Amino acid sequence: MISLSKEPLEDIELYQAQYQRLINLFTELAELGERDGSIRTEGHTPNILITMMNVFGNFSKKMAMLNGIPAFQTQVDPTEQFQILKNLFLEPLKA
Image 1 (spheres, rainbow, N blue to C red):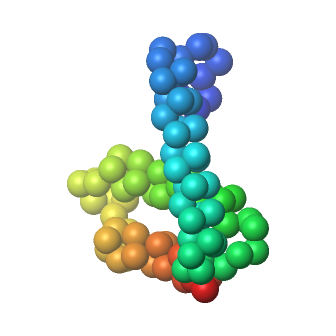
Image 2: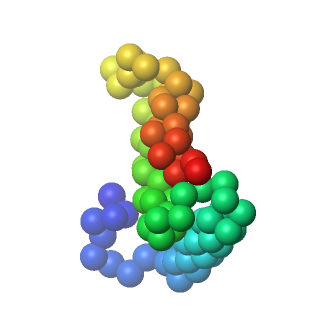
């Protein structure tokens, strides 16, 4: 598993640069939403969005890895799980 590797990873700088771009984008989106009043202005919105990004990333990887393996099929359709997860994060942010 890559996350447990102690060896330097090839192209890790590229991954880190893209990850930082996403963080910057989510931070900017949070600031814009706070300014235009579409999301709450409690100041921790960028952290919530970054956490959401990480959770969605893990969810997507898991669904992709387990797709087509009958022993690992969940009782809730992955599309429905995605919608539930999205609503859990986004509903509390709405102004």
